[in-house]
Image (tube, rainbow, N blue to C red; front, side, top):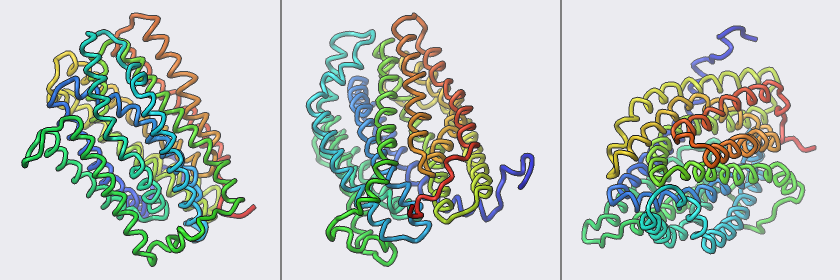
Length: 465
């Protein structure tokens, strides 16, 4: 075993292998989030009310998106390990499980959001501000949702297909599909939001329509490519024949996957409650959070993608039966690399903190708050990167109950109660309040380090028991 600082560094071949998986995912996610940022800026050019109404609805859709992610992630643990052992029959079964799951979740999510949209949006409109502003936020949010809801199912299905491709080592096709979709979205936003090329100026409804068209495009590419390339996607053969899943495998996926689904759902609800607590200070905070989270979305791609790479890489090596010593050594190198990458981008994000908010057509108060939130995010990014790598490490070995406690348990037992108390029972200004809640991730880093070092997560799920 290597000692000292050398144990955190790999060979050139190691980094080439890691980046072979990471680069297509980073390119796709960076461009996707960059275009989302441009979309957000376009809506922000119309006005603060339109931007804030869309932002609140997207925070609610964030919960739906993570439910889809959680549903596919549980089966994805098995996909990566079965791919590592070349068991394509069971890889096919994991995709079937994903498709069934996301269809059911989409049906439930659409029903809940359709019936309870107004009271849910209303939770974010209790801060300091005029009644007229709150009513405008709600009206624009409802206009946006009425159209964007159509794109929820194709989004879910494309996640199932693209997830299986990535987990089996094919990250290029999902990247190509994602890039095509975001450029379609960008062009249609320009045309439909502002009314160019003879199209009507649809405002927030145009932004929603552009998004759902792009989601159908992405689904079409990943699904059609998969079904027309059985030589490169061997598990796609007979996917819809019988559509049966062995009961024993189904049981294993549910036992491992349900905590992940519960985690993504409960964690995302926790995050929306945190944002709702921040909004108690003023309606300006809603707008500022939207601006800061938009640029954060672009830069967080690096640590989120590296976390996914850790999960995929560890899953392949666990499925291949590598020794405990080799697995722990590999994990140290992967985590160190993920944090190092994010240190660089954290510095860049900090430098952009004063520039980015000025792009928006909003008040100086909102811009000032947004700048402060961006700086807090930049400071915390390396810590976020470490906790994210710990999360995917624990998950790669199927320790989904532990990941639930590590992720959702932490948010709900510490972050949510403290944010609720500080926002409602004290007069603490929003910037220190926001900084304190985000700084709690330092505690999470310590907990994650202890859990990973114990090594109880190291297990080969592809071996029948």
